[in-house]
Image 1: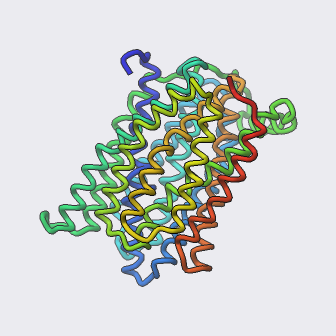
Image 2 (image 1 turned 30 degrees about the vertical axis):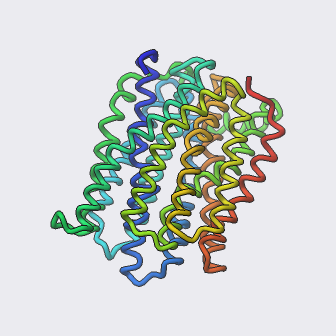
Length: 414
């Protein structure tokens, strides 16, 4: 980090800031909180898992529809940071407001959660696109991997604090309920996200842009249509995005459904949080390792390593029965979760024309978000039909296989 410039460090800090949301809200505490209040309201375990999957699909559908036009608008001078700020405020505000939803209003909790997802994902569209503004092509793997790596460490600090509060509440050491402890965690997450986004807002500037035109929204639609019509000129880029569509869907599904799946196996909340915290610590060095190995073996090869590991995860999940099995599964996820995401981001950053970086990162996000609709629906549907969460997670294997096959048609980026 000492060798990085101010822009690079500030950009990386947003991964540090927003990863607290990814860990506490998307992957761990909120799913457990929702599961608890859903069961309290008389909803079955399998149905609550399905509802959680459906809510994730709704959120990703909404942001997927918005992302291409928003990203195309961000190519205009000065627009990228303005749009980033709008979604950042939306995400942090509703993360804080999760703490005021009564426990018997589980459907309101889902609505607020969907709004936090839109804010988080929307800000990430522009954050990812800023990669071309803050560093050179040769450093993109390194900076992107450091971002994910620092994100895992940054998320763990507030996450540990939240775990301690929840554990103290569950063991009656402090006089608050599990539900109150979770609400405090939502507040901590929102505050952390806000504080460490300040360097990004202050120091990162849009370098590559086009001049502002009249009717920018209308013109953005036309520019988007022109790019789609000229798809042959960017054939390899779109083939990569199609591959990404499938394999990243599997990654996102494993992340978002992990705690619901663990709960269905009978793992208690405290143990689940400890397991997932350990996974975060494992993910930090492995994200950096993926970035280092990409220099020697190229990014495409390392993407295949991630796909293979996740395929093993899907197969192993079918046979899960004990807490130890879930520990092993979490460790496997930790070895490749950050690496495959970081190298996908930098892979695209190397391929895109810089004057259209936002536009193509918009496609990157729409492919990622639309893919995240399919996986949770698959898990939810298969789980409800079969009554088995194991079979639901196994179904995700198909996504990694398809993504890997398509990736073969993409040349190396180096």
